[in-house]
Amino acid sequence: MALVIFSHPSLVNAQNQNSNIMENKKLIRQGFENWANGTASFFDLLADDLQWTITGSTRLSKTYTSKKQFMAEVIAPLNDRLSKKIVPKVSALYADGDMVIAIWDGQATAIDGKPYNATYEWNMQIKNGKIVKVTAFLDGIEFSDIMTRL
Image (cartoon, one colour):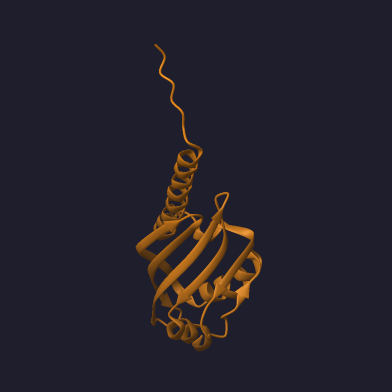
């Protein structure tokens, strides 16, 4: 007697979706761990045609339409103002579909010796192992202060 097992298409799709959700969450978790350990840049996960939106009313709040633009206009100038680079500490990661939400705190030291401590929430859309879209919420006062003070 042979046992025949049929898989319902919706069950297979749900299993594939759950697998993708877990892979995306793992990718982001590993990216933050590598950043915190100093073994890789989190920003290596960004797609070249990335769309990154900084919310709020800082002078840098807008949508950046490429990795190159975002790195040149935001990350490089921020890093230039830091004597000790940001070390992230993730407090929560949530994933659903192709979205991963990270809530994290960053601690650093500015070149004038003052601390830079900020809390972030990044809502990231993942496709093919790359971050393609981000909506970033951050401490606008802390961010604006370091970007204008130095």
